[in-house]
Image 1 (cartoon, rainbow over the protein chains, first blue to last red):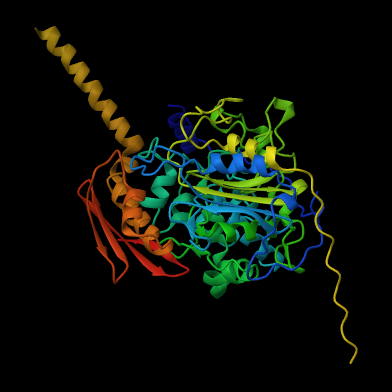
Image 2: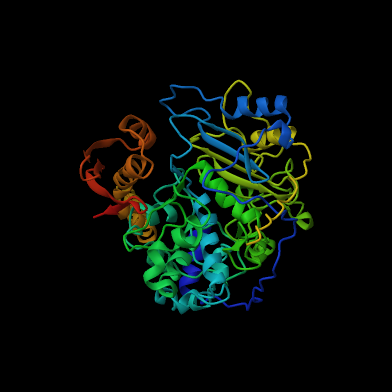
Length: 421
Length: 106
């Protein structure tokens, strides 16, 4: 009923636009990026124990993560497809199940959003777009009825103010995201999202929206021109050796940044390593200076949005999630078992990546869980039923944290002396 | 008798107004809904097979829907296209290339 009233109000009263401060990209990241050996076509493998992972605790992590029960025709239990952990840029743990191999491109659902925002960072680096520009500048569908005030940063920070209902299987009929992906929106998802009325001043109200992600994706079409269809591959995937990337598009050719990035767990980890290393790969800068800091800075609108139970631990950055909480509102950190500098990407059905700078670690877990154990997002400190192998994020992370010991990165490589001619 | 008829008229009239209001509110979503189960199955089966490279048995279990029963699926292995039918509506998804994966076609 509340949404009906909001909609009726939205139709009758134009939203009063509250001006927002411009985003300033500040170079550097608030963590130390160690000098590394170059990462090649094959990821280096390092011994887990010698990299500071306790073998016994890691075995407990492994046993839980792969407590899959097969056959599982009703999809009732934990269904981990792949886990890859990099420390100091090397594989210290990996395991696959359910027919997955190290090169299987896996669906990532909303982890895609964080990849989409990474690609935007490459376009910003080239000076092709500015996060402060209105989406209207390159996407005419965003130029009317107040939408012209929506900037790319408002969309990236999921605070566009466009009306949106992000529900999946629970309420498919009235779900904006289901309509965008599978019915009215499928031919041109950004046009569908842009047809939604503006119900809040851009930048003031945070609402999880897959729609916002695809408007950004479409807004890159004009600036990139002929390069658009190959850009995610040439600007990000190829330079980092992410050869299993598949990136599906809608009926109009727009990359579905909200949902349809596929890659192997190893390749997702490569991309995570790029972000951990502040957008620099083997000495070459791929993302704009300050872009990673921007992605991992809490969205300003989050502070002014009343939090509901479902989202009270979301901690949104720009298409990424951070681990800071909000002490002024008694909001817990989403992953209290991880260091404060941890951040991550998160998708439906247990798909996630966590980047933990103070551990110099990237963790990728791609599952296909249709049922979860209890979640700290809605039930703080709960523990899942130990007799049922259900996936619970905090349980997995707790077991991981128990295995990780402080460990210094290996000494930076000494540049080879060139032979005298 | 007259009073009873009037009461029934009021009730029926209110229900009609309520239904009209509901349709006005959710009409588009309600009209679009029948496409959703077949589109979901066509797109996600296509992607499972040719974007992810899984086999038929894996993908059949992957896209299985529990709420809306589907009415069959036609798979064009050579052309890498799949048509799914549910709620008396058919939808097709087609593989567009290695990098591009699958896309819904109407």
